Length: 450
Image (cartoon, rainbow, N blue to C red):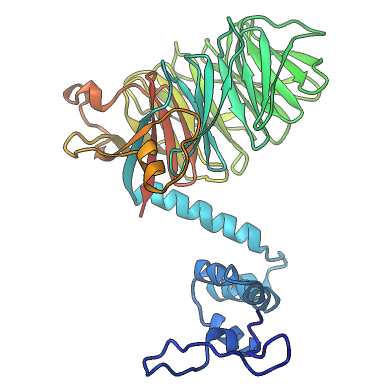
């Protein structure tokens, strides 16, 4: 199908296409019969990048017209005249990524919220991770489960070795990496599990982990961090981070290992040399660093602590930017969307989902469940019967849709029933979504919309 000509490929008469116009069954020109120049002129009048992107996805010929005509670049320069004189090369991919991240931040700070909740585990789930539209939950029973973040549909599950209990896990598009107190387990997303115990350097009482291919870093009760190659299964280095247990870990693109401790400090070590580069301390003691989240775009490290403080340090100066008590009790989890330099989500024992400004530490918005709205439910099994699809293996979860209720940052929490704010034991931020676990058998996905 060619957009520039209405002539058929066989060279015969033009094919007849019914006009969308009003009259009497006649035939007339369509978009497919317009010339390239005419289409290019039409597309150049669009004033929204996403409209232009939607048009480029219609067919190959439209995509060619938009890309060869540099219409994305021209619209960018139209909106940003100062960029014409810049020596920086325009990248459509980078520009759309920036637009998406800005839209995500705007939606979190000013959009409405709908909560999707379902029973996801036979016992309980305390941790969750969300990446590329998928959610992984577990820790509390002997199974990890993978879900779609968009429709909450069950995708797969991964069993933990007998007599072992996971203490931490993470995943990517190819594999899942889990940690027990003395083992690392690796599952292929669509294959068998691989398990290896430490060799070349024994770790015991592993408490937390973080990985970046090909290495996984394990934080232990004795204050050391063990670095293992996930493919050779050998220990490549051991770093002394703290004299106390390592409670949480984060890795940066700059080859830094960052570890929190029960003493309220955060150690920074060079992954290559093993040299400890600095020790970040809180002005508020005693406290335990419970979670870490690093921002590659702004060179900041965020932490949540047992005293309810959210912390922010600049990795370039090793100095604190702010420390704010956003909760009256323990913060179990803090996370932000990769690339977003605006919003940090935090949750903890008080059960309030808070969105915090990354630059100032001020609370932007706070949410709990809305008790006044009746729940709407949809069953996966009912949907399969309705659409005539065969039943799949896995749990037959019923998804309840509820509204969230926004509360003031200084609201009196003792006046809010605890069933509306169960403790948040884990959270993870995706594109316009936040998934939370609560130490129970259910999972929640908070979906933000403008």
